[in-house]
Figure 1 (cartoon, rainbow, N blue to C red):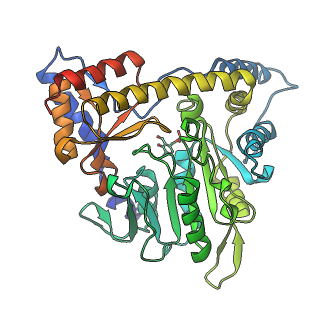
Figure 2 (cartoon, protein in one colour):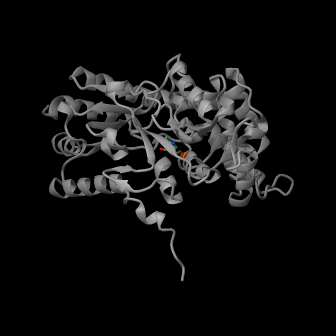
Length: 410
Ligand code: PLP
């Protein structure tokens, strides 16, 4: 008799987006002529940079000739892409990363979900709250999180990030082994300074914990004192894995390419206290479970680093950041308190009068025909907040802000 992994049964359904879809469908049925604007989109909408398209066309041609045809790619990625990553994303910032410390993959979602496989089932995880749901759910599937009671897992340490603490998580009271940090943050759009991040690196060093640092939104950083990589912090190579993605950087959400850095210095332990290098452990895991990212896609990702590619990527990021500032400024002008939107495509607004997140969702949909995402869907500390995104068109973003000003009865 095949018995299922019952940990999967513990997962609450994908309540957030299913519930949003349901409420929007009901509203549309009752208001067929309403023109809905979606500011809840977590996906990019602008096309790929032309430099990437050209590179991929060329790579398709390579596949047609016996001399240039490629079969299975390397598990860790092609040298041509890894070299560009190391030189542009690290060396240019004064960070030394080895070429064999980079692992190219099909997405930061799979990387951040799969990395927990390297760690013992008794490891205690800590997550910022609110949080990108993949970190917690992948640990639920593995059986690491205990029971789900009142919106929280009993074996997970939640690190609240709210307006009260300036979205700076406090160190946990109990000892934790794995710490997920997402900076710039989804959903709050906020960041930490180098000094604030150093507190976590020091904590991890002291407690032999590991930081899983998701910087999928690094390309949106526009302020000077915000670290682009955790390895800008002294000692981070001994305690942190970094995740990056071409998804939001260069519009690769549908094309799929990302990477992860596991420094050789990074060690975890066996129960008898022996040190184990995680770089080799991950290589072995990938060699078994992953057959690489296609040559065509990696050529496309390589082109992100070309002069043309960089110019085009910056134009797109700037388009989204302009949308973010339109939302931020527009909402602030009518007295709404907002966070993020400067170093990230997300605007995290406090609901008027600290209204329940879902009640505000309904109000915004009914009065202004705008769809956003209730903050509580990202974790208990998201209650009383609401996420808006900058990934729509400029026209729709402007129209939505106008509706906030003229239709919303605050
Ligand atoms: N990490 C965060 C914080 C995200 O918000 C997302 C996507 O929304 C991802 C990772 C997924 O990235 P990818 O498209 O590379 O799988």
